[in-house]
Length: 415
Ligand code: GLA
Image 1 (tube, rainbow, N blue to C red):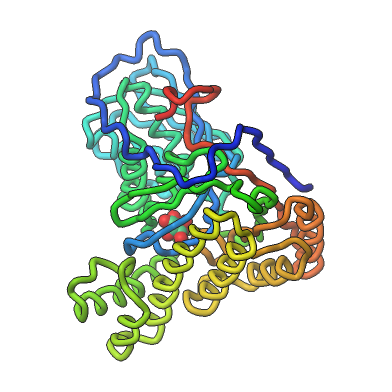
Image 2: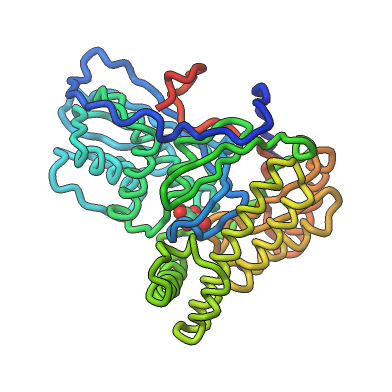
């Protein structure tokens, strides 16, 4: 089955816009008893990254957008004086007698409990609650199911505690929950775009200073394209070893560069010429990983220009170049993903295709002419089924808003 999501919000103007994520700073938290609090739902989207992969932990650029899969957190005060966390997708319910001494138990509930712990450390004091999670974000597909759960949980607990934080502060605390409690060494991209995204825009984020810009998806000839995501169903996990190994290799390369060029703050500022100077100081693997990162930052800058002039040919070309770099230099692709990319590029209407997200499985993201999108999806699925005897769900997506209070129709309800 082909799942088609179409979002029909009015199109904004054709220029880059300032991203409001930093706008309002944290409002002081007040204690709340939760009495009189009706169950409230908070909904956070998933994300797909258009370009800028593995650049978000060394001060680089990323260009993701939010997509219309959702995680929904429902919260209400608990009369029993305990904290209860449940999920439609998992059978176990986690019960906390108190919020002291929280430790991971290596299952789904570590994500919301990690968020709770980070909120407590900021002085947010929710009364005992029942939190229930549900949603339709494909798990382990590289579309950020975990960040989506974290952000929905953070919004729900903040609401119950009658507290609020800026989108940026929420993104940072959710990443800390994932790094420190769950133990996944992820960067900031997913949590940030899930809180701060706006419909019909991709979000260009500088991960060094968290400055960001909203880039229209509908400029000129880009208005005639769709983002099509193909799910290889090969499970990806950033808690698994490969992501962390790549990250360590990149950080070794970054250290060598900074030792040689002390003015460099991180790889986000490094050039390929500087990397060449350091080649003999680092392993061939670290060299190739850094070559991917540095060239990828350049491709994100070029993608910004392509989006602003609405050039799908150039944007698609950059996406495909990004895939080649991930495959050959970063070595984070797998044969199923390479097949999906090669097939996609042979199909009518496809401007570019690449592996998206953490890699080692997951999804491809494709830029496809709108009139060809349905046939593209059908043909790609068919080819994948014949080659691997596997079903590849394909999603045709438009960019949606970041996390919201469920059913909210106005900006003030966004956190
Ligand atoms: C995962 C991580 C992100 C980012 C991507 C790769 O999605 O959660 O922080 O590093 O991989 O770009």
